[in-house]
Image (cartoon, rainbow, N blue to C red; front, top):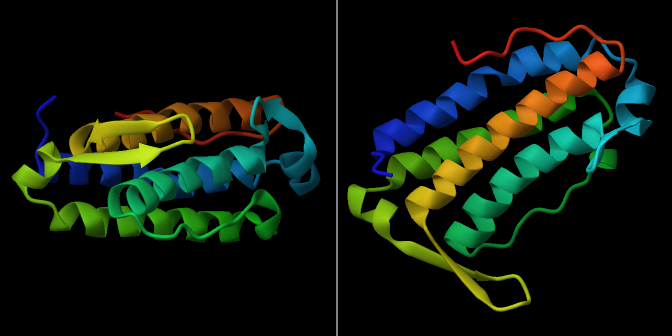
Length: 158
């Protein structure tokens, strides 16, 4: 895959524009059900949302920059607006990082050890993974809203 930093910026901006429609969708679900009803292997809808932005934070902060990752869990978020604010902050940091990359940076590799040995990934592959990971889970979120009796907003790409 041959993406430019401008191309990655566009993809991550695309993911950012869906935070409010997803948050509006979440608001149509009873908060107790959103936090407690299991909708997927990750658990509740709240846990799915947190997993989505926590994974982005993990890849861009810990793997790409080697920095300590802020720890947070679903229970740290007591309403939909706090989820949306944190998600926006994570994507905004990602956009800031993307803007600092050169074309050469995108072809560099990062190595991370998950305990079973080192795993090495190109920066552009990490960014593409993070983008598609968010798209995948956004679909699960919308399904979860429907499953819990809510009314999802439109989040199609076009």
